[in-house]
Amino acid sequence: MKVRKAAVVGGGPGGLYAARLMRLADPGLEVVVHEQGLPETTFGFGVALGARTQRNLEAADPDSLRDILAASYPHDMSMRVGDRVARVPGGRLVAIARTELLAVLGRHAEKAGVELRHGERVDPADLDADVVVVADGVSSATRTGGADAFGASVEVGRGLFLWAGTDFALDEAMFAPATTEHGTFVAHAYPYAPDRSTFLVEADEGTWRRAGFDRTTDETPSDASDETALAYLSDAFAQRLRGHRLIGNRTRWQRFRTVTCARWSDGNRVLLGDAAHTAHYSVGSGTKLAMEDAIALCEALAAAPDRDAAFAGYQRRRKPEVARMQALARRSQRWWDSFPARTHLPVEQLTVAYMSRAGNVPLARFAASTPGVVRAGLAQYSGEPPERVDLADPDAWVSARPWAGFPSRVVHRGMLTDFTEVTNVPADPWCAEADELVRRLTRAGRAAWVTGPADRGDLLTRLEFAERLRLAGLPMVIAEGPAELFPDLTAGLAAGRTDLIAIQNRP
Image (cartoon, rainbow, N blue to C red):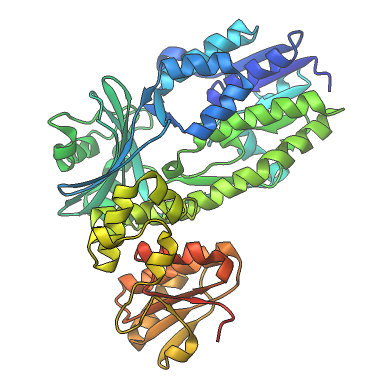
């Protein structure tokens, strides 16, 4: 379609990138970005970009990616519990200061002929433009004010988190718990510059309240940092911080909000990035999704005959990928919300559990990229020496291990006589309804055979619930699933989510 004028509301990565791509596609197009903040007041720490995202950005605009990578900081990953460390190669994983990313994208937008207007708040309804790209973030005033038009909903998470930073570069991305008198806090941290790291910390609500952070959160103004929390966490993570203290930047406790919209456009307005959808930070997807939205939107505008068709094509292309990422993110969020329950696991097996938490990394693929960690983790799972672990076919090896008198981890119903069959697993295995089901099964004190529909999503949810039952102390837990999802079942075994597995429709 031919667009005469385009306006972008929000000068974050997605908005700036969309503005540049629209101008590159049509140098005659008038594009204005309206950002209510000033460059000198921009806040935030680091932004991570994975290999797949980099490939997508390179295909769309190699010039801007070149400058992004030049200002980025590569790193690997590690899981740390106590003095034990399990390291995972990061591949092409990089991070960049959010301020630097915005500066790079702003320069490239202006180079393409985009006009940037900072320090002004606008109402999209008042803008004279054929297309108004709404990229004003998770708290989007446009989406909130037009919730019915967009079919918007917001789901608030149970756990709490805060973003902080450090004035030194960690050696690698790090996941590490710290247990205090009030409970366990977990750090997600990574370097993004030679002298800076992001340091995100999360906690369950009970720990947060016992530490008094419900009070400090109420007392902290919206434009200030919770200095009490920063001091407390600096002490809690002193070993990881190497004598440094945490840095705040409007740092306060908050709950993650998962945004979904049934419709991404209304009239000449089209939502992009966090304004349209969010996915939990533990899958590192916010900036990725926004910039990939920008690519799809600009391609749809160039290919479609009119605005409505362009917006429909954009949503049709992006919504399945966003839904996939949100499903992964919800599982990841639940895993991290319940992370303290797993700190008894040896660090390598815990890393296997982490990598397989959302069903996105098969055991065989992880073994191929990180054989040392997987070999150690499977040895810990099986109780056998590492040299006896066969990584040529880890799924077969994991399922063939004997356990509690069974010749392998694969059983059928004729092999057990005393168990409770569980067929209606709640969609959220950590909700109140699931809590009550766990209590009933625990009181019964019998083995639990967890089964249900053959859909992959249902199986992954069953494995989550099976883990809850194991953590609650049931004598035996069996998770049942279809033969074609055998790798998911064996990953559940290796990660400690279930004791035994069964193949559906086998006698």
